[in-house]
Image (cartoon, rainbow, N blue to C red; front, side, top):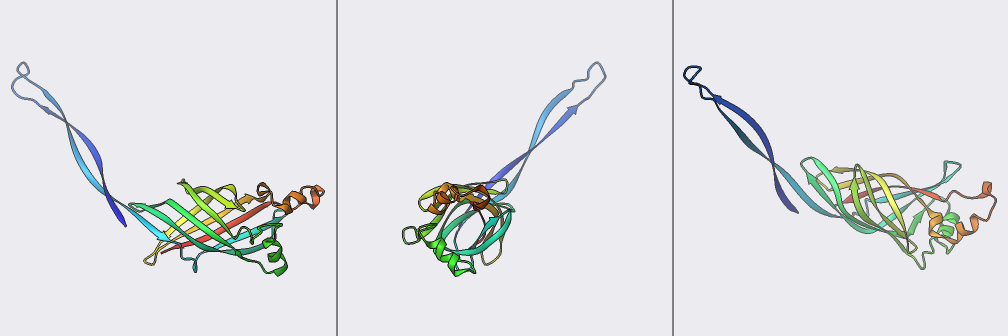
Amino acid sequence: MKKTIIPILIAAPLLFAACGGSEAETEVTDADSTVVETEEVEVTVTNYSVDTASSIVNWMAFNAGEIDHQGTVKALDGSFEITKTGEDMEVTAASLNIDLNSINEESEKLVGHLMSPDFFDVNQFATASFSFDRHEDGMVYGTATIIDKELPVEAPVIISASEEGVTIEVGEFKLDFSALEMPFYVEDVKAPEEEQHDPNIGFTSTIVGK
């Protein structure tokens, strides 16, 4: 843990006037004086390892705007950095690897299909990853790498801290899987429009760091 103290200067200008003697002899001296106060703000930078037992990624597939299938996938490993300035917390670095062999859904047939070469092809691409770009106005920006192809990520986050560590709740965001050119979606666009599947897959996650 690295701590840095940043002084904040607060300027308070005061105007003084001194007068004396008769009106003809009055001499007025104006002096601009500044009183400088300092306030110490503690900035703490802390690195966390992802607790894979407590962290989870949720996924959702849609049909006509409604959730059609949903399941989970587990974090394999990762880390993140939290910079705390006063009471404000911000993600300032992060990386996460996902174990695609851990894909879960109530339909075993669907899970087998998702792991096949039609989708994630887990025999060739066993992991997916996320790399961090920035945290700005409550949103985290970065890049997801899936089957060796990159997709931009833009997700809302809420950070909470406890004595045990820090939890990052990632709100729902969507990735357009058609951009990955998976064989399933390449063939799917050849079907009549009303029979095509929604390629936008939704995600939320809970990432716990210790």
